[in-house]
Length: 252
Image 1 (cartoon, rainbow, N blue to C red):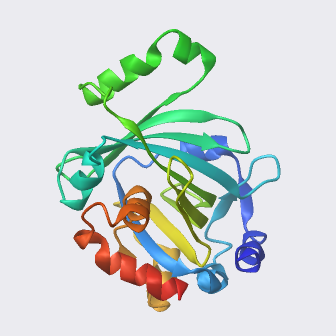
Image 2: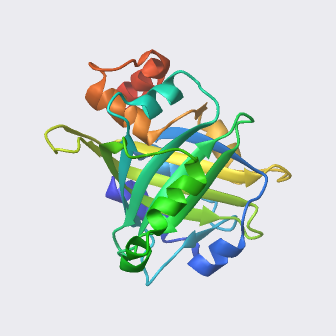
């Protein structure tokens, strides 16, 4: 996997986190793709002049550790499985290289819009009770019944178009673990592209390339797929079976 990821990333010009934060995509479309890692070089080769890559202190790949929360009956998972609109996910995301952590609420509206809000987790925000205020403000309901449900980790690279109208994340090294660490699964052969672009963007070189390689868009939730893989014997998985078969095909 390292050879497939390392080769193309060195050819991209770097951009800073400040550059990326300035390029906010207001009315955006999100599209995800599952790609075998051995195709990554073919996906990215020749696109260096179309995108730059996030670089912080000389690093271009960053490790994300995420803890998802759910009810004891996995209601948030079931809401997604059943296609419920106005659903949400609750998680703590930790950036291993910088040491920063955030409490995040990711909502899906009944218009299929994704809205993410987050609160930095620092001794100050915890001490003055901002966590409870943030959750009440975002969700408007008690979350005392939420429990840690799943650990997810992966490594990410981020590309951005020169005008900031398109942003691409590339996740590799996906790993899922139960909260007690008794169950776990790694997907070293799978890469996840997510292309986020402004609705007015005329074209996307990467989307064109993925189409040429026969890659098709998928609906992919790391939390839901990880839950299906580790706890499929305990919960419904019918909605995700085509995607699970796709993963099996890549990994076999």
